[in-house]
Amino acid sequence: CLKKSEPILRRTLIDRLRFPPAPRLRRIHSGSALLPKLTTRLYLQPRSGCRTPPRASSSPMKTSAVDRSIELFLARNIRDGSRVLDVGCGSGWASLAVARRRPGCAVTAIDRDLRAVRETERLVRKNGYGAAVRCTVGEAERLRETFERNTFECAVAVNAFHHFRDPRRVLKGIRAVLKPRGTLLLSEFTADYGGRHDECPRYSAEQLRWFMTESGFRAITAAVQPPGIILLRSRKKPG
Image (tube, rainbow, N blue to C red):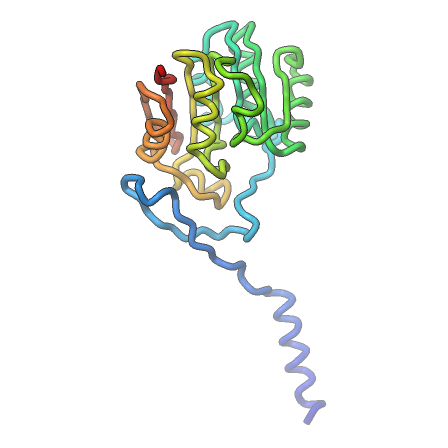
């Protein structure tokens, strides 16, 4: 009897090795219960949370229409010679874009991931902008403890908002370190388009505007461009 069951047990073990159990589904809420037009979606996500590896400078997305749209958005809204804070810099693509398109800007790139900061350093040095970009390791939620108040004319957060653990705290920190009438530029992928690149929870344009208004920003303009980029510009509210 045991000999007859051996082939069945062997096939069962082989199947388990070939077809491991599916990852656990977690229900992720896209924001606070007070946000407008909330939806709850199922995301296939590791238990440790949403972590996307830094985008290398050789990525095929580097020359895509998406990146060109974001780079043009940054260039149009940042003045030459400004002090710019890149929050959640990732591999440094946005920092390089600002330094390249806006001469004289002094960019400070910050990310909690040491690997991302090192990648940013390599990228800007490779392209000859090492003197224009200063890189530092730090938490986006602790900007007020990291920088002095009224330091930067502009802050940018390019496809990083969905990684922030406490978005309101990050935005209030950005407001604190911006100079009076300082500008915040934010870009995010829509849920449909962003889902092609990772399984992170995403925010709608209305939700992003709500976060910014509640955190002390005004004159918020938002636009959604194909294939699915949300671009927002706002100013620090006085007081």
